Length: 438
Image (cartoon, rainbow, N blue to C red; front, side, top):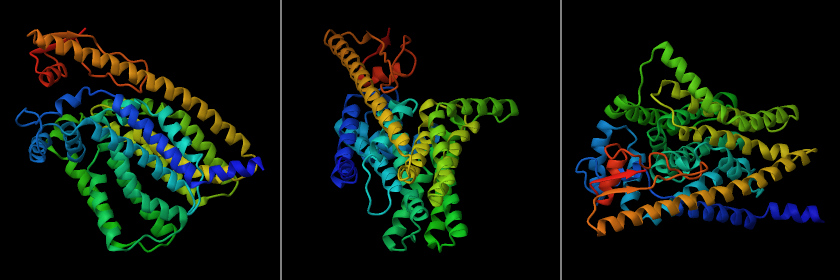
């Protein structure tokens, strides 16, 4: 009877909704507590006039210059400008919704049609929360989230029909609404972020090939067009003058080897996800379960590799950019979990899920505490700035922000040289002549 009650709770739509609400609430809290930092100060202003953004027209004007001098991420930085213009709570709500949407999309891919298993949701959340390198920079920091985690939502939305069709063996929709949605999402997915867009285009190609040649499906014409549009979007980003001057490096064999080792070391941070995914794939193959799910998991794994090792050709590889490789591995794990959890001997897997739950609870507690502490430091500095301005002092010294975990971000939050960026941007933001972080 106890097992039946547990299964009933796990398969309840109400439980699923409750878990999603809890995830949304946690991410909303974290987004509210995370202060602005680094690029946030710069994108509060127009690239052209150097004045605060006041309209959509000024955002578009700023982005035209941004495309020429910085990089080609027009969509991502449109959102950055927009949310730094609007009240911060608007971004916080949207950001929490984006993260929750990502978790929900992965969950829906993992579930057979009409079924629910609420336990998958905390597993997906826990893996993302505990394993993602530089979590705050990818999911909480305003400009970082607009560039990184939001790219994941748009690419997953684009790939979702292909992934679901391959898993469930259903036909792709041919309606006009599907056509418009797919074509719009393909452009956004292709032009959003260098490594994420490259991986998305690569996975779309693999999935279309599997559907057409392995499952012998008829593919609606607009999916082929979407692949071309995503490639065009990617090229429009990659070939921007700002991208060519800031993102590329010299491609000598020595440089490429060094970049490969850097990418390899970054990917090594995801070893626990690779280990779990490997065990699940071997188990599914050995038990002859979910052949289509195994194919999808392998495709997502290939996309994870592509998102990581494309940085061999980049000028630098920030840790936050590893988030998409981690996310795709989490999605692959989630897709295989229902198959493995339904076989005899699943008690070992359930124990692992329980252990992940304990680790996640601990990591959430220390993470939120660290975010709260950094927020306190940030507010204290703002008080120092306000008091100095009241006294007519426009050259201000404040305390450098410090954090203990990767759930708070203090990188590029200011240093001891008032002539360096971001000190110059921070001084402009607060109406100061200069600011020093000691």
